[in-house]
Image 1: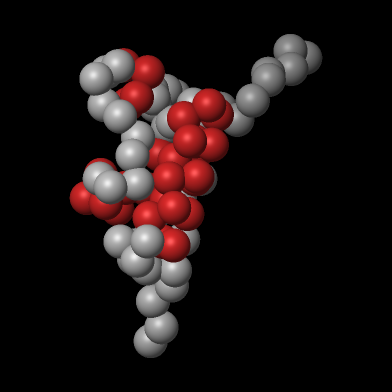
Image 2: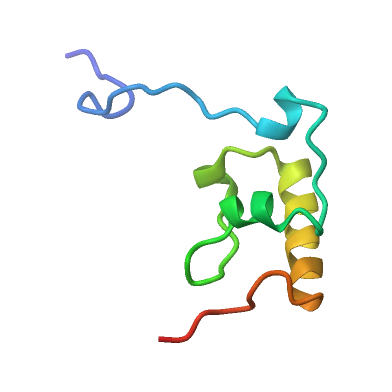
Length: 81
């Protein structure tokens, strides 16, 4: 009997690409809070790479700039119910 690798029900999808690697003109900056809001949840948590599709280098830069924006009170640390 032939053995298959992977899940046969799993559909293949297009791999997410890093928005910052594709467009070199986009700068990750704490002052651009509108762009940084795309990378945090409505609760204020930083979204992981597997959801946003950013590469590891830019994900680290994003995390640093989001934390800077939080310190400068441009982004919330958390949202309480």
